[in-house]
Structure formats: structure tokens, C-alpha cells
Length: 197
Image 1 (tube, rainbow, N blue to C red):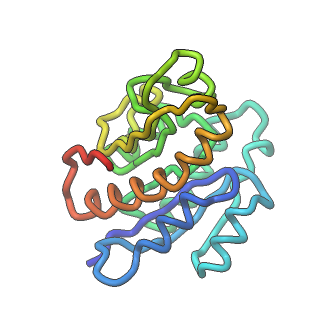
Image 2 (image 1 turned 90 degrees about the horizontal axis):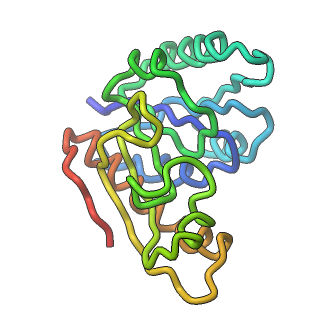
Image 3 (image 1 turned 90 degrees about the vertical axis):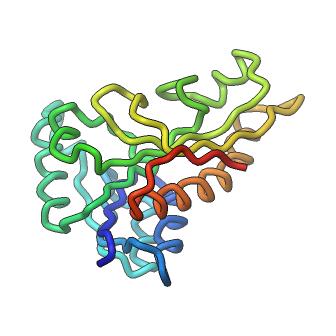
């Protein structure tokens, strides 16, 4: 029986598309929902084109009431009955209360070699720190930001003249490759650390 996967996005959805396209053939999982907290983003059109059910829970409609927003997200997820939730450019920090309801089932991709550079602006911060290598990590989501068990990492050298934009552009295909492989392993019950390349 295939694992059911919901993917949460906030933007263009390139990681979401890579995940969805990977879940074919003998892959142990299938996509059942794409949820965005922002209406009209490119990722929703991509999900539609890929034939994946999609829904918007617009966080701006809830003001500062994060609990109400998360309750609506949880309701949409419960209706789709996912076994795994993949955060793929989902730009809302989820509260410990929400995460505890899905403990051990949420994955996230983060654009740094965790535990370095948790949070935002990771490409600029890697350059400011003089890092020789940069990369991305897939980890289980826990109550602490970008702090759960690391399931996969992909690294690349920082080159002379790199900017945050050039790092981001070079890293994106690596994110796609890493996330798809980690999801396949995770859905098969394998939580060992994967290092790429």
C-alpha cells in the first residue's frame, strides 16, 4: 500500500513538482494533496497541471490568529489522510502544537548544511561566513526551527564571485535530487542519513 503524501508550498513549487514527478512506478508513495498558504502562486498551477488535488488556506485571512490558521490547515490535511507531509518552500513557521499532531511525519528541505544557517537568508549568510561549502538538508520537523534529525544532505563548493543568487540557482537542482531521494527512502522506512553527491 502506497504512502500518501501531502506537500505544503508558498510559491513557485519547483520542489513540489520534483517530488510529485518522482512518485511513479515502484515508488512507495503517491501525492494526494498540495496545500498553499498563498493564493495564486505558480505552484498551484503546477499542481493542477500534474493532476494533484490542491487547496489554499490563506494565512492573511486569519490575521495574527496562528491557531485558527493551523486548525484550518490541519482540517484540510486530515481530510486528505496523508502519511507524510513534505514542506517544500512553505514559508510559515508551524507551532509545536501543530507539529506534535503529526510527529514523525513531517519533512522539510532547508537551503543550508544544517546545523549551519538555520532560518532565512541562508545563501547570503553562507557567503558572509566565508563558508567553503554550501548545500541543502532534508530533515524531520520538530518543535525547534530547522532542528530535527537530518535525513539527507547535498553539498557543493562555494566558488569565487558567487552571490546569493548564483548559489540559489546552482543549489536548486540539488534540492530536487536530494528531496526526491530522501522521500523515497523515508516512505520505505529508511531514516538513515543520505549524503550527496
